[in-house]
Amino acid sequence: MAYHGTFDEAGIDSVVHLSEGVILQAGSKRRVMKRIGSILIELLQNVNLHGTRNQDGNSDSFVVLSATEEAYTIQIGNMLLSSDVSMLDYKLTELNKLDEKELRKLYIETLCNENFSYKGGAGLGFLTVAKKAIQPLNFYFESLDETFSYFILEVKLER
Image (tube, rainbow, N blue to C red; front, side):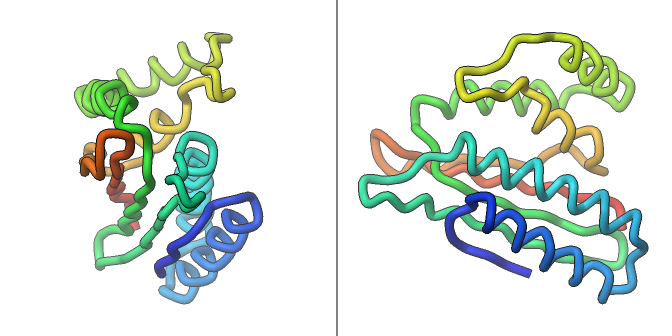
C-alpha cells in the first residue's frame, strides 16, 4: 500500500483504514493489524504535526506499507526545515543505541515528564515506534536546498 499527499486528520484516517484492510487480507491477525495501525497513526500524526510545507504549500509526504514473510515495513517521508535535521538526527541516533529495557525505562520517564514541545508533543512518538520495531529505526535526510530537507524513516515490525 502506498499513499502520497498531505496527512491531515481525514488523510490519516483513510490511510490507517486502508492499511488495516490490507493487513487482514494478507492473513495477519487482528492484534498485528492493531499494532501496525497504532504505529501508522503515530508516524502520520508526527508528519502532520512536525512536517513542513514548501513555498507552494505542498508537504510532499508519503507512506508505504510492504510485507515479507517475516515482517511488515513502513517507510514514511516528509519535508522538514533543514535547521531541524541535526536535532532529529541526534534524537533518532540516541534512540537506536538503547536496548529494549532502556527504551521501556525512557518511555516511562517521558510519560511522567510534563515537558511539551512548542508544537505540543511530549517526545513519545518516535520512542513508541522504536519500542515496537524489531530493528533499529533506519532513517536518512536529503537536503533539498538551504531551507528544506527531506526525511525518510523505515520501520520494521514483526509480522
